[in-house]
Length: 255
Image 1: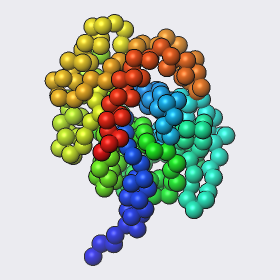
Image 2 (image 1 turned 135 degrees about the horizontal axis):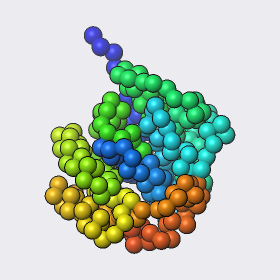
Image 3 (image 1 turned 90 degrees about the horizontal axis):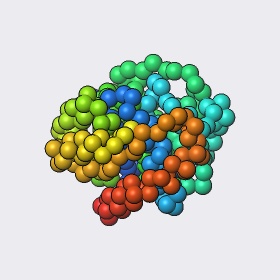
């Protein structure tokens, strides 16, 4: 007789407090998914929406780096659970980097399941939107996250891709997998687009699979110079994209 994991009730309660959960995914690495996740987090937080961030890349968490944070300075606060690190007044971060600094932890199978469940069960979130930066591809981490998210009807996937042919072809595969898992989508967001043709390629793929086209983030030279609070300066140049994203997300708040 199998035992029921007592963490499941806590996970359902914790996830149920969010108005919206947005896992950010990409079937390919190197498309700038973590940067886009951080950009979206700043975009929403500067629109006065309280945002919680979860770095679900368990073996190589890097979201804190894009946010301009030093892992050694990320202190864990405990109060009937673990409180995420406050990035600013409207933005908080939970990551394994809070516990292991910049060390890498190889995980597989049951270990992945336990870490995902522990993070979701013990974290005391303060946001109304949860953004999840997932690792590239589709692995045990994704399967466990989707299993946990199935307990709440508030999760919508944001897919990130570059306009390159390999990345675009991979979008179709992950859409099919996620559809079989009964997941819903916000849409497809392009990154590193250099011209209108790049934007059109992303839009065509989105339409092919019946998913909303969210727009494109242009190619940004010397991108590391914008890590941290400098992300705000990029937002000023992405106002049309910000408006489009907000419209899509506002529609989902009514679920």
